[in-house]
Image (tube, rainbow, N blue to C red; front, side, top):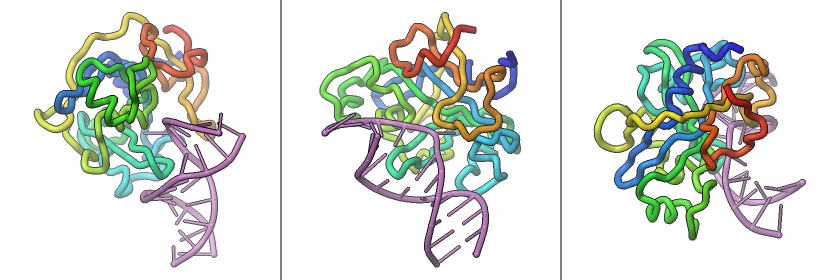
Length: 192
DNA sequence: CGCCGGATTTAA
DNA sequence: TAAATCCGGCGA
C-alpha cells in the first residue's frame, strides 16, 4: 500500500496534534488527505479558483469552505507554495475548554462523539469564513501545536466521496487514531 | 444567469 | 432516511 505520498504523510503527522483557539484545545483524532489536480475528489481538481486559493498557498495555513449549506470544514494546507493539497480535520477530542465546546455544539454533556465529524470540529472551535487562509503556525486566533502521536494508526478510504476515481483500497487517504473513541465508521479502517 | 450536487448533521 | 439550507463550478 502506498502510505508514503506527501499528503498521506502530512495527514498522519497531524494525528495527535492540537488545535487551539482561546481557551479551547482539541486533539486531532481523524483526518483525510486531499491532493491537487490529480485527485478527482479534491477541490483543486479543476485548478485554482477563488474558493480553493488557500490550498495553493504556503503550508500551515487553514482552508475553510462551506458545505451542504450549513457546515464549515477545516483543512490544513500541507503542500509547498504553488502546489495544492490539504488535510481535512474529520474528528477530535476535547482537551480543554469543554464548557465552551458544549455551548457552541449546543450539547448538554460530553460524549466521545462530541467532535466526531468535520462539521462538529469547526463548530466546536467557532470557525467560519473569517478563518479561511489563517496562518495556523502564528500566535493568536487559531493555532496548530504539537501533540501526542497515536500509538495505533488506522487507514482506509475517504468517506462520502464515492465519485472519486482516485480512491482505491491500495492507496488510503483517511487516517485515524486507533485508540480514540472519537472516530466514526471504524469498521471501514484497518491498522497500518 | 440558473441549475445541481455536495469532503454533513440531526432527529424522526 | 430526509430535511435543513448555500454556494462554487459549469453549461447555456
